[in-house]
Image 1 (cartoon, helix red, strand yellow):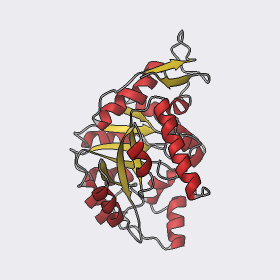
Image 2 (cartoon, helix red, strand yellow):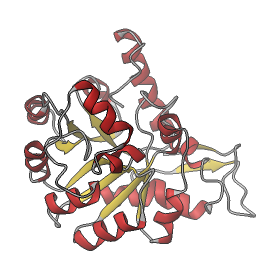
Image 3 (cartoon, one colour):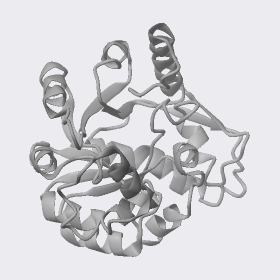
Image 4 (tube, rainbow, N blue to C red):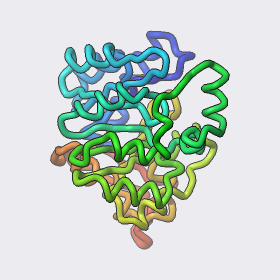
Length: 284
């Protein structure tokens, strides 16, 4: 929620954040895991009935923002450090962050094909890094997944974000490493905006019986922050499963308990399926 499209003025940006917060609450969102890289969303959070857990994302291949993120964590409650991704943080910062989270952290993972190709010194991401003079000190790892399991403690709970191009070998390596719960977040409308395709990765996650969460990413890559609109991208997934992704699994990930009730209308109850007409409203 912190990264609103750059074309907005500061006033428009504040209004967009407030509007998004109201929509989320009206559609039944009790808790929100919010990845931030500045302090612009905290004024909205402080007045919101939604309980926020913020993750200050650390990134920078030439100039790190680690100190700025530490200041955010020190000043704002319910905020912890998280690395942005396996491709945007040098190893010393990556290690510092991955060993500092008290309970759960987030990390963008396999958002594009270029992430895996970077570790093979090829692909569009590697080409762009070379063109702007970025050097990576972590390419001795054979893959993003290997960097994760060789850096993040097994006892650290992690929410992997995006997962557009996750593979079975990624899943096998990661799940064999972690002893703490691991969660896999899908943000389909954002993924379509970023990569042009939602991909079938969710089917692979389902086949492995993994803990799946539903997210929206931010207004930088989405038109609204609506969980029900994200669920409509999974027309082939049973309603009961979608509701678990959007509610129970999120509570477990954040260590929270339900706080209210929602009413779902417009679903196909005979087929137990979501439809384009499905809407959700907070009851309590």
